[in-house]
Length: 156
Image (cartoon, rainbow, N blue to C red; front, side, top):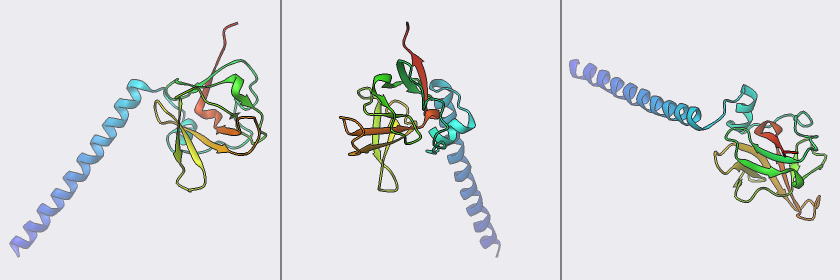
């Protein structure tokens, strides 16, 4: 009986120790990376950028922006899109028909129907890209959450 209790005791200790160590390492890695390289995000920005959420259509602050400039990643400030590639698709989110070369990474969406777009530098969720809708000559629409970007106007 004593051996059986000792076995249970040591098994519980082993599982507990392993679980705590793994959580601690993951947590520390995320905090270090975020604090060293990325901008602080609001809870809404984190919901979209980190947890791959979507802002409500028609609510984004950059949806109707017509200024000349560059749209950059909200998390790491990497340039993503130029204003010349933005167009009004009437979909409720800022739309672009081309990204700055190498700025955006395309990944199959878990739903198998769409293609997700992320910042190539930091992996921030931007939105989705659609091909074949014929909105522009390039036949491409990057549908991007405003909350995933910041806008830097051109100097006048």
